[in-house]
Length: 232
Length: 81
Image (cartoon, rainbow over all chains, first blue to last red; front, top):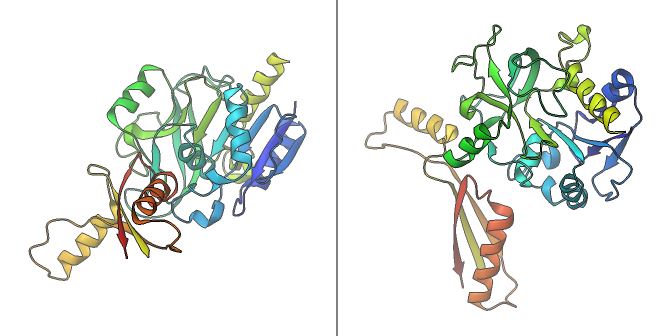
C-alpha cells in the first residue's frame, strides 16, 4: 500500500499529510512534484492544502494546468483513490473532477478555527471506518471555502448521496449558525459519482493527534487504509 | 492590437466582496447606488500575427479555458486595434 502526496509550488500542508500517512497509517508515502506524471505505483493520492500558485487568478485555478493533473485525471478515471483537502478540494473542482466551485467566504474573512462536521455518508472509501452521522471536530483554514453549485448539481449530489460531510454544531445539528463560510446546503465535502474522489475543506490531517486539539481526522485515513487492505 | 477581457460572477452567484464594497459606499454617503458587483479585467497584448476574428476566437477560448471558471463566471471580450 503506497500513498502519494502531490506538491505544487505553494502547497503547505504536504508535510502534514506525509506525517499522518507515515506515522499514523504506518504506510510508505512519497512526495510527488507537480511536474511528475507517473502515478502508477500509488494506491491513493492526496492533494494537500496550501496556496498553489499563490491562489493567483482563483484558488486552485492554475494548479489545474500542472503536468501531473492529466495523469491524475486518468488515475481517477481508472478508479484510483484521490483525497483533496482544502486547496486540494479547490483544485479538484477547478479540474472538473468534482462539481461546483469554492468562492470567497460569506463574511470575507480568512477563517482559522475548529468546526464540527457530520458524516453524511459512511459508505465511501474515505469514511468506511466512521459511523453514519458521527460528528467530527476538525480545523478549517481558508478564505475560499464557500461551496456553490447550481440547483441541478445540488439535486444530483443529494440524490446520489455524494454529500459526505456537512457543517454542523457540536450536537450534530446542521444549521445556518453552524455554517462557517456560507457553503450551499452546509456542504463541507463531496465525492464523485464513483466514490473514489473526495474533496473537503476541513483538514483531517491536522487533527490526528490529541496534542493538536483533535484526533478525529484519523478515522478518515484509517478508512482509506482499510479500503486498500480489503482491495489487496 | 490588444484584447480586453471582462470577467464577472454570474447573476445569482453571491459576491461577498461586492457586498462589502456596497456597504462601505453606503456608509460614505453615496446615494443612488443599489448594488455593486466586483469582477476582473485582463489586458492581453497581441503580437499582430492573428487577424481580428481569429484573435477574438483565440482570446475567447483563453477566457473560457483559463481566465474564468464557467460554473460561476461569465466573460466578455473586446478587441482593440
